[in-house]
Image (tube, rainbow, N blue to C red; front, top):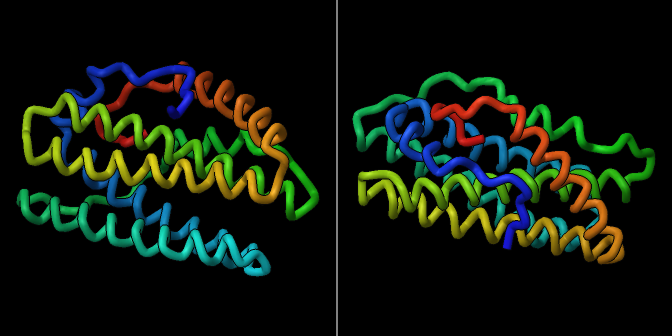
Length: 193
């Protein structure tokens, strides 16, 4: 469904489980950044009612996810650590085309957001299948389902403002670029991406 060109090594989930405080901290900040990105999308495209109508509930959901991860940390006697640089997202942002029109910038933003959600969905699926703790498996299954919906939302929004063939072609380019990023990144268990 996601079309990712390079799957995460399933052993990543077991590595992540050994760094639970770090992975939950990183996850919390990923949710916070997703909420913030959604707000920015609304602010920059407030002339588009579909963006306002469809992204506003996503922002609320992402903030709710941030709070849910904080609650999970607290339940496990763990603390929210410091936010760290997200090398994956920073590399992904380099795939964005330098464009001059607001419409083209919107397409780039929506597809980069879709890519982040797709990779998060894939990683949360691995956690939901491979960690030993059954509560954590259920916790991450819920996030996996949600991220799949967010991925779909951003792709669908892109198709509302651009021809489907154009979206598909650009998405293929981003998928190829993202696979190269993943190929060159160290497999770390303390990061979602």
